[in-house]
Length: 353
Image 1 (cartoon, rainbow, N blue to C red):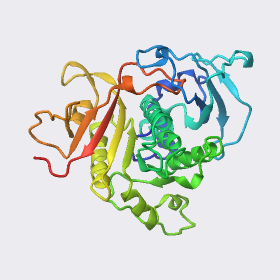
Image 2: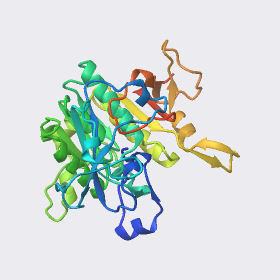
Image 3: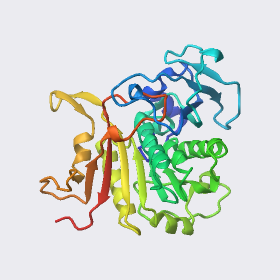
């Protein structure tokens, strides 16, 4: 679900005062649980049947979860719950299709400023896309990529299985610490070298290249600064990923600002972006609208399947093509796609006519 806000968390006392939000993905978690949790998302090399796809059918799987402390990823006893938070006995588990497991430490609820601690549907969709490509083609084999607003780092973890290097980026020590914990939780299970999954701070408000690493024992967050060699590698990246980073106009402005900085340096890059349209009643428009969606669409010219562009007279710096979700099979069992997810392939257009 990745965070998307690129700004990180605030002080604990501010967190307590702010309104809490919860991802629909976490509806099966035990109610009234506070702190970090570990969920295990199962998948195999074969996609699920159509009942678990984008037609809104409910997933039949259950989610294994364990409580986790904020300072470590210990291994307490596992607890399995169904969608209502009720205990599922071991004899009811169905592991027949689950060849692999993504283990993700996350919060069940958070303030808006720390939504990167939760898992969101759009991140699971983008992870499905990465898994599909890795199982059916060599497109992402040996790729260098950047995940922007990574949140829990779910997409980057899936890509690390086949990539040469994946930079998992966000901002805020709480979110970055959690990303690093998830890399450590999954490297052995998914069989990738932890050095391939590089957790780094990327502040959308800052210029590119970002500040270079300087050893500072008084600042624990300095370990997330970039090395010069990493900046050079990131500029050679050919693929960017972002999930659920579109939910306010201000953040959308910042997101496309950092996307332009990254895509205008070094190798030609393609951005794969997933989002969930969230509807609310607007007093200004006296209608139900998806927050931030219209503003998001203003940043790029739409290209159809034939390659033709729409008649957007302002000719933005990006060209986008909406992808057909029917061509992205569902591999991860523990979520229902519903009807409000979208996926876009976006290219940088340095010379709009």
